[in-house]
Amino acid sequence: MQNKLFLAALKVYGAVWTAAQPLLRKNKRLAEGWTERLVGPGWFGPELTSPGNAQADIWLHGASAGECRLVENILRELAAMDDFHPRLLLTACTRQGIDVLRQAAGNAKDALTTTVRYFPLDAPEAMNRAFDQAQPRLIVLLETELWPGLLYCAAQRDIPVLVLNARMTPGSARGYALAPKSFAKHIAPRKVLAVSEQDAARFEKIFGPDSTEIGTMLNIKFDSITAQTATGSLREHLPDMPDSPIVVLGSTRKEEEHAVARTVELLRKKMPRARMVVAPRHMHRTKKQYDRLAGPAVAPILASTLAPNEHIRPGSIVVWDRFGELNELYGLAQAVFVGGSLAPLGGQNILEPMAQGVAPCVGPSLFNFEWTGPEIFSMNLARRVANPEELALVLSESAAHPENREEVRKRFDAYLSGKRGGTRQAIEAMRAFLQP
Image (cartoon, rainbow, N blue to C red):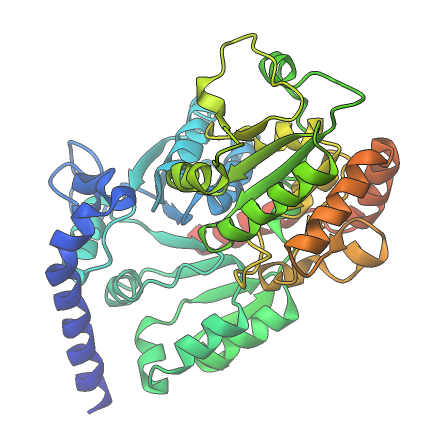
C-alpha cells in the first residue's frame, strides 16, 4: 500500500511539472536553456554508446553559482591527479551556475572530459530521458539538492547518489518532514556527508540510518576561499581616494532591497563623499534595486555603463551589474555588508570579504552559515547588526577608520587552521563508489 501511495504521489508530481511548463517557460531565469531543461535528443551528446556503457562516470550537480564554485574546486583537484580522471556531466539550474561550470571545465579541458548542461526539469519523464542519454554510474549532489524525480530515477536504475557538502536548514528539515516517512526510502541517497553534526542529524531524521549512510566532512568552501587582487579595470573605476571611502553592500537579495535602500540613504547623510557599491546577488534584480535607489536627488550608476577608464566620483552610488567581480570589489572596500542576512534568508558567503582583509557587517539571519561557527564573531572577523539604522552606523564607522587588512587576514588564517581539505574528502568519497 505504501509503495502504491508513493507511486501515486510521484505521478501527481510529474503531472504538476507538465501542467506548469507554460508558466515556467515565461520565467526569465528558466527561459535560458529551456530546450536543455526539457532534455530533447542530443541533450548529453550527439551519439549514444550501447546500453549499459556509461557516457558519464559522474553526474555532478550544483544548483547555482555558489554550489558550482565547489565544483570548480573539485575539477581543479581532479585535473591535478594522476590516477583518477572520471568522465563528468556537470549541471546547474541557473545561468550564473552554468557560466561558472563552463569556465571550470575550460580550465580543466586538457585533463578531464566534461559536458556542461542545464539541469533538467525534475519531471520523471525528463529525468528518465537524461539518464538514458548520460547513463551515469554515480550521481553527486552538492549541498541541499534533493530532487524527487532525479532521486527516484536513480533508485530505479540502482545508481548510487552521493550528497556532498550537505547542508539542511531547520526550515528545510521541517518541510521535508511533512512527507510520509515511508516515502523517504524510495528516494534515499546512498550516502550523505554533511558539513556539521547539526546538518547530519537533520538528514538522519529524514532518511534514517537504515536507508542512508550519514557522516560529516570538512566544508569545501574553506578550500575555495582565496584573496583575489582587483584588476586594473576595477582599480581604474575605484582608485584610492583618502577622503572618499568605498562601501560595498554585496550579495543583496530581493527581500532586503528596501532595507538596502534605507541603509544607503542613511550612509549618504553620514558620509556624503563615500562611494557606495550595491551588488545584488541575482543579476535579474539589478533594475529593481536601481529603481529603489533612484530618487529626485539621487541618480545611481550601472556598472555596465562605465567607460573603460572612467573614475567613479565621490558621493556616487553604483549598482554593480557585472557578474563575477564581487570578490575584487571586497578587496577594494573599506567597509562591507554581506546580504541575505537582513531578511530571514540565511545569509550569503560571509568568508569572502574576510579573505580580502575586511571584517564584514552581517544581519541577524545567518542560518545558512551555522557551519562557520561562533568564532567568526569572537575573533572579530564579522560584526552583527539588527537593522538598516545600525548597519549604516557600523559601516560609516568602519569606512572612516578601516582596520589594517593584514591584521584581519592574520586572524582569518588562524580561523581557517584545520578547516581545509574538504575537496580531497569529496573526491575520495566519489572514487570509493566507482572502484570495482
